[in-house]
Length: 209
Image 1 (cartoon, helix red, strand yellow):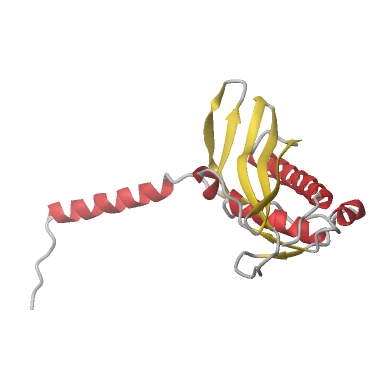
Image 2 (cartoon, one colour):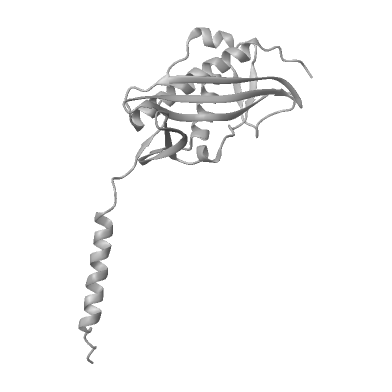
């Protein structure tokens, strides 16, 4: 039994398709580099003491703009166009910033001596902390100088009663004007905000239900 040989046209089309496929693979850019906050440093003794008056706390996952719920890393050129947020081409977060920040805050509060519960494990009457993130970005003051900016609003509830609310903002200078420097600066700013948050929690007089 004889099979028909492919025509010259078919063979040419197959060769062209293969060339395009190989060309597409070759033209792809570098593989993305992924960043996170790294392991948290041990807390200072003064931070642990500040949180002692609040033994148990429920911390809800942080809320924020939709662009903070993706793995894209963004920066702003304050010296050129502060209103435009630009994504890095080949750099990503391991986890969306809202999740990174939520986990770091929970870790820091727990290190401060507070028993941290999730919303699914919460029991009635336990204070609830809600976090709304307003800013989480790497800002370039010039082509060679940048910093990480973290701004969030913390609201503490006991039942349906708002105990107190406060806005925290920290800025940390980046060691390098790139995505790696931005990731390190944002991690440092997040840790600084967490320390401020712990100190604030330690000053609150939480009413009993």
